Length: 246
Image (cartoon, rainbow, N blue to C red):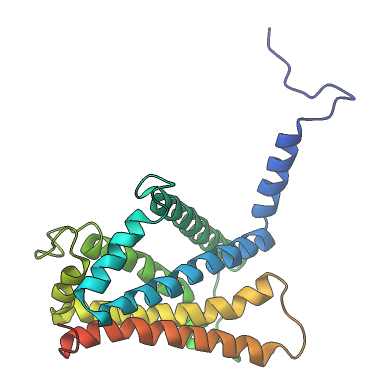
């Protein structure tokens, strides 16, 4: 004898289930995934900008940079336990990355299924190089983030033999002194700049923040943001290789 799971006539389903069903239905649509990519992109773009601005402390010397690194772990204390807010922020970023990647992957599969046979000829009119390399650039950036964490956060000896726990300034300078490490970082920053430019340009349209005559301002904003972040991040390995930062 089984237990019926059908809703009783006249009795509304639990409100929580209605909300969950609505969110899942929205996310299951292409529009929902594009909106999710845009919203999570805002979170990630904001982090990239703040991260770059914080790393400018590198130019003020070891004491300032290490003090900033220590502050990140102690922010919120003594109201909150040490590193607690940092972990909250990390979890938010992790969720944003997971949703961003999953949305991009799902939309890519949808596009491939919609056209299993590629065009015999492509006449690209408005697509930029950034747009055409968006997907593979995203994969490359994801792999770079894993490497970046292993190199300067987790301190894996296989990628950073000279890592010293608690000395962020030393780890950055000693790491970038190896030319091939700096080359990897600089290549990743170029890919990041292209990703930022196309992502920011697409974000406004995905969220419906678009109207006639807004195109020049949208592109200018995306260009300025991408250039500022890219040049700022490129300056760090270049400064170490040229001896500006010792």
